[in-house]
Image (tube, rainbow, N blue to C red; front, side, top):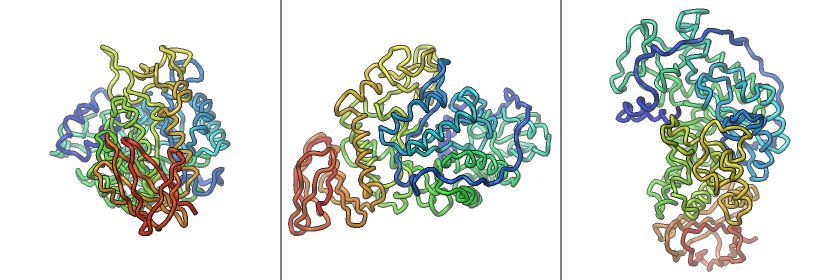
Length: 543
């Protein structure tokens, strides 16, 4: 679903993207469901954090699709108890946070971005009691839990939309309705869907109507719903589709009302100690802090990192991204669950592990808060698209997790998996990756451990260094007296480099990959050495 978000930005692609999302203005198939929801106010309750202060600034996160992670009861679908059973695996990997893709009761019973009830956990995931068990078990391992909160729109099966459609319980203005299609000319087809002789706004999909977030009653309901989960003990939220919260006519980007709403949400979060909020996207990195998100995903950086590793030269956009003053508080990825963010890394690199590992090193040595998409740490590929299957590309990005080489289940379930396995599950699975020295998993684990052990990698300033080679990226990370030097050669040939480092006549000891080799700078701070092809190295200035 979320791959269609770019249709709100790129008008020239609107037609194709809307078609891919099941677009079109005819909403005749939408049947809003009646039902009872809990709409009661929720007060802020004392909910002290179980995690170290500022844990999220030091954490490496994993984004987890609960339905596709681990099945505990044999029904072929992942659930929260299954995830709990894998927390030790995540702790051993070294992660300190998990972002759960939507787990609320949904109308799609798949990716969850069409929410049917914001105050209930999907029954097949185990319900609220299971979520509480997960929170407690994760906290016991020093891991924080973020929930994906979809405030921009709901499912058309949400009872709130039923009441809005028929004007019940004073809910007509909870969603965006017009008597006529406003005719936003740059949209083809129109995002306004005809239903009951009126039109409602649903740009992502006919079954995902947008709330009217200029309505105070709607905002108050969502804030109360968020409080419910904060009171339960969750550690924050990933906020979906924030660019599209407020529409002024056909304009969605850069709306001041959106930023005011985001600041209000963040102020609410601040009523709870040590919580974290990350926005899906903002128009530019600097808006993350200035306009209420706290943090936001640095889209664009991800493609530059992947392109550098794939193509063997430092991407032309990378220097500008690394110079952004907002980078330290942004959240960073290589890919995620959305098509716009690219295929699974294994597919983007055509199975080339050396290039894959360079991308990993790039992500985990930069400032910001890194997020890993589940399965990327073992090189998982796209799900198999069998002949005649209804599986779409977003579904292919979300295969069952590959735990073993079992050809039928990959260790994901004792039943029949809800979706086809990853194409490469026989060779790239947790069991085989953990048993193989120098594997993709081993690379992630080693670099996460390095990041966890070096405060300068987590919070230090970054200063790029001219390398004299189009294939070499070099920079320092400095925090107080700690200084690290990161050098990555994306190229297919060894590179002779001379780098000007801080401090003369100094020794730089290798911290990654951990060889005994050291670099010695001359009196002016210059170090000269030969950097092997397709290699990443991290050095630490000796005291």
